[in-house]
Amino acid sequence: MKSGQVQDHAVTNLPKNLLKRNIDMELTIYHWLIIAAFIGVVIWAFGRKRKARFEKDARIPFEDGKD
Image (cartoon, rainbow, N blue to C red; front, side, top):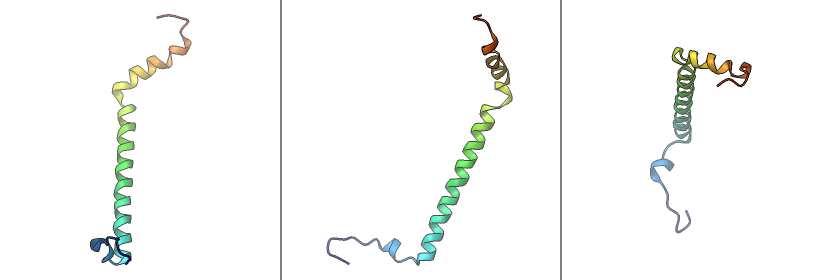
């Protein structure tokens, strides 16, 4: 180790395969969280409460300048 470098013993003392598994697990958890958030947004956006508004907004192009 060169002088002036700081070595993080908590990370460097772990076996490489254990460190890789830890990173893979974190990525897996983040992926599931993102997927769950996406599903939540889709359910919220296309829920029954918003159906009437979507139908009203879908008729806007066919209205002839009516307010």
